[in-house]
Amino acid sequence: MHRHKFLLFRVYRFQDSEAYGELYDVFFERIRRFIYFKLPTREDVDEATNEVFLRGWEYATSSKVDKVNAFFYRVARNVIADFYRERKQTESIDVAQEIASSVDIEKEASDHEEQKELLKRLSKLKEEYREVLVMRYLNEMSIREISEAIEKNQANVRVILHRAKKALEEQKS
View 1 (tube, rainbow, N blue to C red):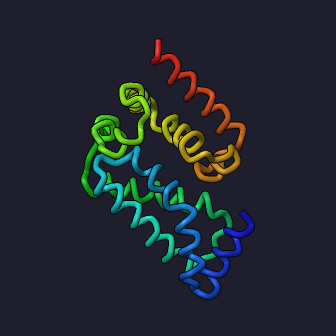
View 2 (cartoon, helix red, strand yellow; view 1 turned 45 degrees about the vertical axis):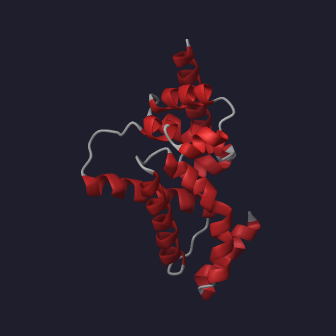
């Protein structure tokens, strides 16, 4: 974590593209996975992920950033909001159907039917619940990291996570 702060300092102070490249390597998959559950197509996900890191570079070279993890998630949330705002979509998209039909997921899933069922249940959860579950279990983030990313205290994150797991479990029965 201290390494990430150091890299961000180098980006801010010296516009060090190699330092930003290291941050990109660390956070790319996490941010892409986070966005993957929120946008309708793989092309949209790729475009949005690239936009996150472009905006991240622009901001990090002109302003000091303290919490790198929270920073990239905040930028990702803004990019997602812009995506839907630009397209003037008011209804949420059935992301689970898009993901379940994805070839990569089919290859990676050990039990395809179980995977489809989980994605279907996830899509029925509140956005906030889905977000913390993805961060915690897919991106393997700590409670502290999640609290920084969604800008809520750790106690609130624990409550949200508990409620999200309970809601997911209730759908099973």
